[in-house]
Every structure is written in C-alpha cells, then in structure tokens.
Length: 499
Image (cartoon, rainbow, N blue to C red):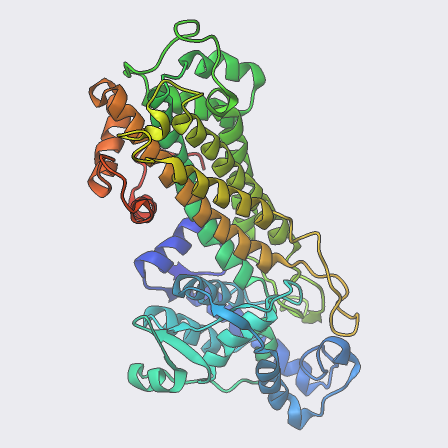
C-alpha cells in the first residue's frame, strides 16, 4: 500500500493493522516533506521566532531558546511528555497510531526530515509496535502523552511489542536492524502534536461497530423467529413513509433474511402488534447506522489531516501556528459512536427479556430444559442487563468536559481519547450482549423447529451451533458467551452493509 498523505481509507487502515499489509511511501509526497524541512532550516538560519522550534512549549511559548539548544529542546519534550499511565493500548491500536502518524507527516506540513517517516514505516513493515500507555491524554495539544511514548521508540528508548511480548526498544532494534533517529528542530513537536491516539482507537472501533451492527440485524431476525414475530412491521411502505434511508435499508434486510421463514406471523394471526424491541428494529438500528455514517465521515477526514502545530506552507514560505491538534471533531464523533452502539445493546437486552420471560411468551420459562430444577438462561439476562447498564455510564459524553492545562494557556481540551477508549469498551460490551441474544434466540427456534427457519437465518444458526451446543442442561454459560462473542469477531456477514 502506497502512503501519500491523502486518500487513506478506513478499510486500508484495517488491512495494514489486521492483515499486516506492507507500506511504501509516495516519492512525490516525500519530495514535499523535503521541501517542508528545507523551509524549517531556512527559518532557523534567518533567526525567525517560531513556536516549538526556538521557543518553549505551552505556557513556555514566550521563552526563547538558544540556537545551540534547539535539538536538546526536542529530546526534552519527548522525555517530559511521556507521562502515560495505565494498561497499554493493544498492538492493533499501536500499529494504527504509527500508520496514521506517518500519513499525516507525509502531507508535508510538519517540517520533519524524510527519515522520520521512513522509520515509522519501517516499524510497520517489521511489525515492531510501541508500548503506549492508554491513559493520560486530554485530547488537545494533541494526544501528547501517548504520542510521546510512540516517539520514544523512534529514538531507541521505551518498550515495544515483539511477537506479543514487551521488550526494550534497544534490544529489538538491534535484532531487527533498525536504527534509532536523533531528533532535530521541530521533530519532537511534530511527532506528538496530533490526534492519532483517539483516531486510531476510533477507526478500529468503527470497523468493529460496522460489522457488529450488521450482525445485530441477523441475530434480531433469529429472535423474531423465536418469538413468532409479526412481519407487517417491516413492510417497505411503512419505512418509506418516514423517509430515513437507513431505516428503510434495515427493514429491507430483515425482510430478506426472513422471506421464506415458517416461524414468522402476520398481523392479527397471533397478536396485532409486537413490542417495540421487535417492531421498531428498523427505526432504532437505522438510527445507529446514521450515527456510524457520521462517525465514518469524520474519521475519513481526520486520518488524512495535518494535525500538528505549527504548520509549514511551502508555496508561501510561511510557518503558521494554529490549533489543528484539537480533538473536538473526533471527540464528538466518539461520543456519538458510544450512544449509537449502546442503543444496539439496550434493545437487544429487551429482546433477551422477551425470550426468557414466561409472562411475555409461550416458551419454557427462561428457556430451561427443566424449569425449576434448571435455571436455563435466567442469569444470562442478568449479565446482559449489567453490560447495558455499564454502557449507559460509559456513554456519558467525554467531549463536554474540559479541564484547563499548562497554566491556562491550553484552557479548553476535548477529552476525545477518553471518549474513544470508552467507545471501544462499549463495543466489546455490545458484542457480548448480542452473543447472549443469539444463544437465547437459537434455543427458542429449536423449540419452535429449526426446520421452519428461513434459509438465511438457518445458515447463521448452523454456523453458530458449531461454536456452542444446545442447552440440554445447566452449565457454565460464561464460556459459551465468550466463545460466541469471539466467533462474532471473525464471522463476517456475507450481505453488503451500508457505507
């Protein structure tokens, strides 16, 4: 894959991160990088006062730095800002951060030497991933602490993941024949000003959410069969009367999945209307698809954006300070992703309740093989309810919070990385709730008659049954839930999904 600084897609990020696709650098873009570096060196030679090159940082921006100290300034910056704490980001997130950092520097606005970008790509291609603590970013002035830990690796310090194990960077660089770089003017600042931590988490979370939402539709269709749901609610005319494209699409897909099912019913056949968690699937999941569309649009811009400060404009020969490092666009997108995906689990949990509650269906209580002696799926619903409640707490918007920093020089921050981390956790919770719904729905259709299922849903059922067996006796269901959740990660929906 050739990086240019422009046109990188979320799907391409996924290929580099998960499929380890190798990366090359556009010669044209690298020439622009060289021009940008030349502009920085000219400005230094002309004794121009430029933030972060011959001044301090943050509140120290008015402190002028002597020429002989400007390289030391960059090294001090990386050391002082590597204040991340907590568990490290996954290797996948770390890999995505390296890719996105290389792409933004390749735009030619940052003033780094070409060797900096070459070294980032070398890390990708040799599968050396920085160990980056996940906590400590305010999401404005960029993801300073996480990116400082990434920059530490470039200079041969810190730790990296090597074949899944944490090792010293120096040791792994020696093994893999990677040369550390020595930072010069502007390069430390260029490496840590930016939104690549929150954006990396956001991109990978979006890719998971997109697939999970498609799976939610398929699982909901099996639940409809297990509850002998009414198909009239999915009539295309109803949804066209409202007009939301995503809602229309969900209703169409549900109808397609169930078109040959003998388990679904018609209006008035068994009841006049289903509960909202069945009848309003297109309206609710359609709204979540709308949310994902917004999130994708913002991420698609940000992964190709110049997000550091100051920026170098070669054509005019000018260096300008601004605030492109502020993470608010991604912070709001991550908060919306949290809400959109939380609602997927919230509605799924209500369908679980309808599957297990004997007051709401004609199935055995809690889908138990021996009601009373065996509890069946009773506590699965408890677990789903717990995860849904946790999601409600995690869905509190991070982007509306701000705590001033750097002696009030940086007096409004985005907290976008917190929002992104919470979005990632919510998505994992949603996957487990859907796994529980699938377990309960499969048990219900077995009671109704698997042979009566639609061809599409029966195929999904058959594949899932390879992962977890039918419930014939109470067992440790935790293992089944985790097994199904893990299976959902790798079980791709064959039908096309909205983009």
